[in-house]
Image (spheres, rainbow, N blue to C red):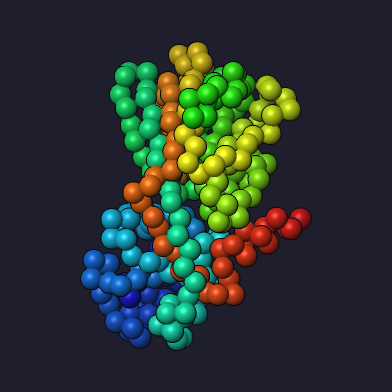
Length: 250
């Protein structure tokens, strides 16, 4: 097991304790990555080590730990061996800016478009090359995976998606027009294209998790078929159960 710790208070001592108990090995020579921190650090590790294709077992030391198991240093080898595996495909974002440059990034949680100024964003939305929203007037819009549906999407009043639905969620952010449009649940295979209307007057940025590109003219979002993250959870704390529980919180 390779242990990777965030800068959260207590992580250094937890890292030292675990490496003393179970040994120290680099990620490239490991069979599993054990991540110590919160959800933000977990996302960072998944991005940084996606090329290894290793299963990842997280233990919560940060403030938010939706993707993390409880922190318990004892019998960790047995916990990892008994863990339940959840496989997640991220999103692939391609964006073109006003200077004609094209950018690409990967999102495990969501791809979001946000207005850059006090002017509301005007967005045309196409799904599989068919226009679905002629003009969305809003602070922006996002496309979230099932794992990311409890993050920014939830705060934007989007629906929570249980894993296994093979779907993504398209959610407007503070929409003004159309007034009654709440968003949509789409097949995971859907290709969502945003075209920015009046981009010089109403500039928009596009963000894939923590990679941001400003002054975009268009953005396409689709499932990334070549990358598949493998997360490990204690059987009594599966990600599906956490997503289910979130829907009943007040």
